[in-house]
Every structure is written in C-alpha cells, then in structure tokens.
Image (cartoon, rainbow, N blue to C red; front, top):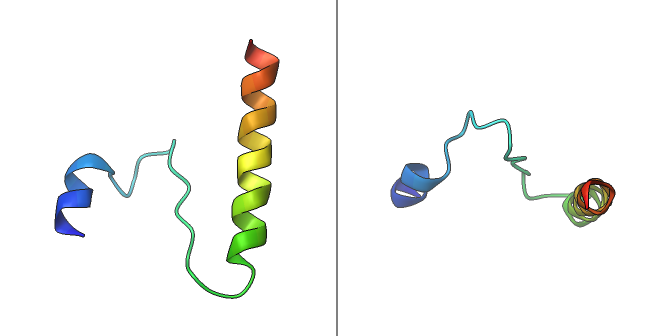
Length: 43
C-alpha cells in the first residue's frame, strides 16, 4: 500500500476510491458506466 501511495494520491479528485463491502460491485459498475458514457461523449 505504501508504494501505491506514490502513484495514487488519496486526494486526487480523478480517483474514486471504493470501500470493499456490500454493494461495491454495483457501485463500481455504475461509476464505470458513467465514466465510459462521459468518454464516449467527448470523442
């Protein structure tokens, strides 16, 4: 985890950190869908 902090800063607004637990898969799918939709609109 210490090495990851060198690459991924906890306060980077581009990164959405997810807590493992109930509903995390659905939340990840929702966020990915939003991101992909936004990317398609930019192209």
